[in-house]
Structures are given as structure tokens and as C-alpha cells.
Image 1 (tube, rainbow, N blue to C red):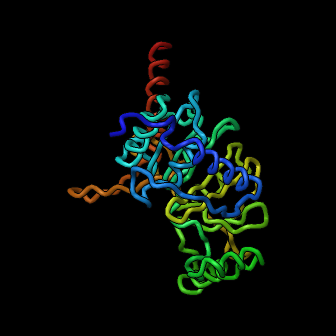
Image 2 (cartoon, rainbow, N blue to C red):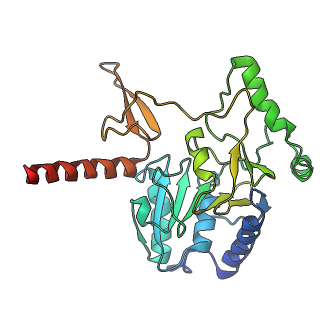
Image 3 (cartoon, one colour):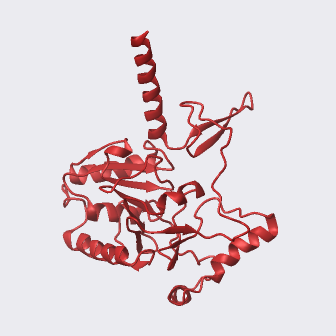
Length: 289
């Protein structure tokens, strides 16, 4: 029975292979690099791609943050965090600004990322053309030819049918004016955060065995038509019921008894930080009075 593990769970050759593929992904922004995805102690589709990226990069001095759908305390986030901590001994944090590596599912934190941070996004379906072309062989050819008519056609059909683009998450983007990329199922709200970001953004799909990247200061443009420009979710007039924030991605909450609709910050640590700041500000005012 195995009672101990290699540092960061994966063997050194596996980590070296993943880092090599990661470097290639960084060198060709938005290009999907195949890699030998390993079996992990969580099911494929639960973040194995992001987990392998994190384990291949993490060092003893790193500080880890893991979020799932904006929450640091979800079952998936907590279990991934426990696995990484038990096999590395590193410390973790809920505060985005203090983390050196942030592994995330479906969100980019509201706090602006810095140059010395790496954001790892978990990706279920990395191929942005998969819904129009099921053949992997053919999609590789389409990327090589910069033939992205299928991605544009998907948006055009939504406009014809609904007079608007209805894609709410996983909205396709053009990276470095070359590759159309699936930004993982982040909401449209997060797409602009990828454009010329200070931090390195890595995306890993364990089931599909793909790694791709957005290096710092790389242009990332959401696909849009001139007469139907890209728009993020509109939260005008809506405020978080806990911290009062109105410039963050908000979840809609409906009280079953009163049927009253309220809103709450999706990024739970950002919301908590706002509430703590609010309390500190009120304390300062009391001291002055």
C-alpha cells in the first residue's frame, strides 16, 4: 500500500512533459497543444486538466487558491485544494491578491490579476468549433486555414433567431489575431479580463488532453459583428445584498417564501473582502466621531 506520494502527486517525468507542452502553448497563444493527460484521483470532467497544470507548475513557496463557480468553499474546490496541499505541503488562501497560482472553474476573479500570478482555468470542451464540426482531424485543418466561419455562423444564427447573441458562457474569442479559442465556460462578463491581462492564463482540458494559453499582454477579442457589438451581462441598477457591490458578476437569488429577487456577488471571497472593508470603514468613522 502506498503511504506517501511524490511532491505534487505526479512523477517528475510527467510534470516535465506537461511543462514542455505548456511552454509550447505559451509560445503559440490560443493554439491547442495535445498532451498525455494522466489518470487523476478525481473523475475526468471534474478539473483534471487544470489540476495537472497546477501540479506541474507549483513550487514549495507558492500560495494556492482554488475556486469553483466563484466559490472557495464548494466541494470540488475544497477537494482539489486538499489534494494539492497534502502532496505539496504548501499554504493556501482565499484572497486573490495573495495567491501565486489560482486554479478556477468557470470564473476569473473580480480582483485584477498581477504579473506574478498564474491563473489556471479548467476546461471541459476546449475546441470552439466542436459544435459545428465533430471531427478532430477537420477542426485542426480549419484552425490551420484560419477558417472560422462555423464560429461566426453560430453567433449569426442566434441574431437571426433572437435578434441578439444569446451565448452567455464560453463565448468564443480571437487570441493574438490568429486563433479562435474557447475561454472555458466563464461568463461573458469575464472575457474582457483576458485581454492584455498582466497574469499568465493557462487552460487545461484533461478529458480532451489539450493545453492552451494566453500569455500576459496578449490581445483577446470576443467575436462580434459591427452592428451587433459584444456586450457583457447588464447589472445596471442591481446591487449585491451582502456587500452592496454593483460592479461585479452577480447571482440572482429568489426567496421561495416571499418570491422576492435579490442579488449576490458570485465571487465569494471578493464579496467577503468588500464586507470586511465596509466594517473597517465604519469603525474608522466611529473612532473619528
